[in-house]
Length: 187
Image 1 (cartoon, rainbow, N blue to C red):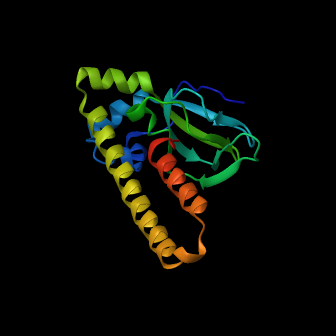
Image 2 (spheres, one colour; image 1 turned 90 degrees about the horizontal axis):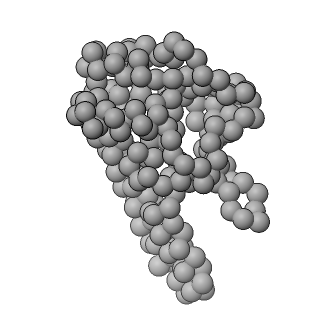
């Protein structure tokens, strides 16, 4: 079951191993490490569900977490399994929308948690660590978008080659999927 621990789950050096904290100074890393809480999940336990409010960013310390999306009337679809060193929920502070996927522990899992309120307070105070976190997150999301654009171009090129054999409804479905990918999917 989810549990909150009192001592920081990561130290300053370990924290800098996560992409969004690489640029922190040693002082900033110590400050952020002191702001983090801890969560432990048992195998099969849910961290958050698709549609939940984005209340925190999570750093996966150990274990594995599966990210899945759910559609009405269909079985959940697994997107990815994340391991140690991964970050979950990093899009929440940027878009202020409900979770776009469900996160379930595949193994016993230990995470550090940075509440969105703590990040917001750091931004309001002008804390450099909070700004660095947002910049690093924006860079990663831009890289993901660039990769998605390349993949979309590849699919469109394949469709153009076989256009005669593809019915228009399939192209319409691809366009709807592309729009959803660019506007709705978050973790």
